[in-house]
Image 1 (cartoon, rainbow, N blue to C red):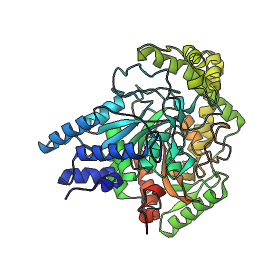
Image 2 (image 1 turned 45 degrees about the horizontal axis):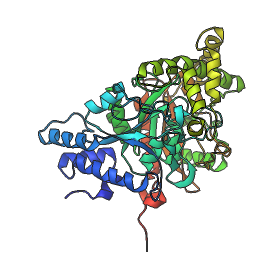
Image 3 (image 1 turned 45 degrees about the vertical axis):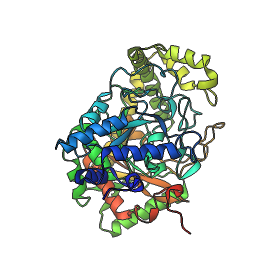
Image 4 (image 1 turned 180 degrees about the vertical axis):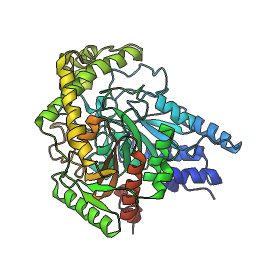
Length: 493
């Protein structure tokens, strides 16, 4: 018996893969159901108007039908053959804008798929569309509103439509929570997968820098940028992680469980939001009662000079890396960061209606990686992140856990929308070091999701996902519609 359109939306990626395998559905049916769902609640003028999808792939249904034909002939490219996926719009996909949310890149056709997209296609996934994001991956202004871009507008949080969907992978997180797709690609420089995963009640992992190919992604920082998988379940994230990396043991490690993982609790990395921090301690206690062994560790925290050094590094690297990307893109439009600034000034009503591009101006002033200032800032940053923070914290364990963000704060395009936001420092050291961080839902506070983050060493992502799966199983938040936005729950009475 075929699955209903509602069941297709609610199903995880691996559940859809199993249904495809048994003939209960087809990839074309899944894609059609999701496109209908997007048309109903996502686009401007719809009942909900999430604005999580920036553009739809013109060949999505055709690709699904072709993959169905392959399946009927007994050809399967991977365990996710025929399953749809959304890709953040700072990743280049032929047929999609690849705009990073800026009209400076609109109308400049993507010449080739990013290598990570090639991996998705070769594994038989259907590229469904591109997700909205914080413009230029949120490295444009200290006063920006996460989730807003000139191309896509403001993505809102499905759990409460006046709240933030996080940044900068806002659309990826919101679309997953709204059941618009089972899988998505996000990118992170410092917090940009972690934040939307936490605020939208989904799972994500930022792998160690270089684990997933970074070419074809609109850059900020070669030392910190990393693309990674996002989904509603750890198992789906693990399956997509295998596709992106070519590793074949991650799902098995996740299914083996958390029993042999050595976990530390970084209780000093609090968010400053009392209810979120209290929930984290309750989750830790529940884990201990369930037999998950943990120790405690104090993790070194950043000071103002660490923050300043990180900003210096990002500004210098963006000057070089973004200019190199723009010059390679082709088509008519800005070819350098300086030209991009001029473009935004000339199109201020579209590009700068709510906040400026102060970080662009500061980046231009650096001149790039030249001179001692960049090298010294990067050296100090890495010494703090690796030698003072991560290495001591992980000396006797596989990973440490901490809360990451408070519940989603209210959007405010006038004041920047983050005045009531709270977050811990859990993302900063792994961001600077280029080490991995995973995030899994740990519950709700005032009806809004909050996440638990897991930090480990490069190459230890499979164990980190196994730990995430352990907490996912322990908390069992899928039961009782805990992690389902209200407008998607069955109406009673």
